[in-house]
Amino acid sequence: MSLNRNICIGSRKSQLALVQTHFIHEQLQLHHKDQTFTIETMSTQGDKILDVALAKIGDKGLFTKELELGMIDGSIDLAVHSLKDLPTNLPEGLVLGCITQRVNPADALVLNEKNRQYQLETLPENSVIGTSSLRRLAQLKYHYPHLSFKDVRGNVNTRLKKLEQGEYDALILAAAGLERLGMQDRIHQIIPAEISLHAVGQGALGIECRDGDTEVLELLKVLEHQPSRDCCLAERSFLRELEGGCQVPIGVNTKIENEILSLTGLVASLDGQKLVKDTVTGLPQDAEKIGIQLANNLRSQGAQEILDEIFTQIQRNSNPIG
Image (cartoon, rainbow, N blue to C red; front, side, top):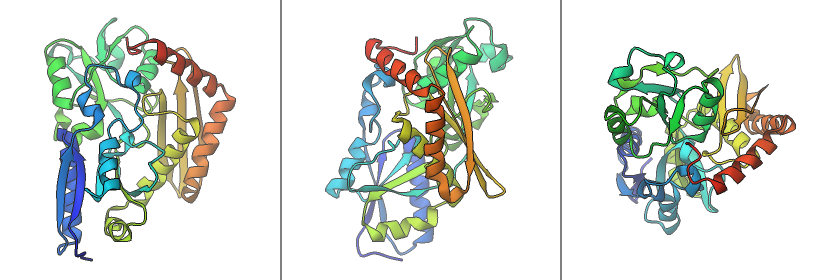
């Protein structure tokens, strides 16, 4: 399929975003050899504000708004996102056109040189762990209350530099991001789901485009990975139903085995003292219903009270990581 118009792909300017966007560009060009694709980069609010905790400034479109405005005004035709950054409610006129095959969605432990002999469970008391994620913070506090936690912002290279300079003893980062950047050698330990459920959509790329742009939607079909889409739609439905952004301690783990989709989810308090967790199974084609059912199950176990308490804390505290 070849269109008369150039297809412009929008991307953030960060190194990881560009790696991901160039991968999508190459795949589209490979499958549509006669079609012209170009890349347009832009900075988002989340890229510009690096001195404030993400939870304090909010995250409704923090890394996506500028790209979405570009699609709405027609300056770009589609945008490549880390799916975990894409809000579950999209602006009117835009749709999630494609979800790519997911890579490792787990969290990873990255250590500085002097701590390489440790695992997460053996780190000395008061070791300083860098994370900007309330989800990781809450789960790790629950399992390892003897560790200390400190907010860390910036791109992956910036965070690794701060780690090696001794500001942190360890970082928790997404394994998928490190792998895509060719930094898999920095992964010291994959953190098991029993310790840290991952973020909604983590490890997958989401391609957003204009609703009704049938030509672009048709081009994107070659990149769709149905099992990944089913898993991620279940997770996004779960998050949407709880009305929690990605900067709320909500974690998930999803798998499809023997044609059955299994979705595990949790909601935790910031101090790690309260945690509710459950699993719902069903057919992959009922992915979004599974997500809603899991949200309702957790609500009945006290999840809403935990979330209400978190929103109050975030409003009062400029740095909930500390």
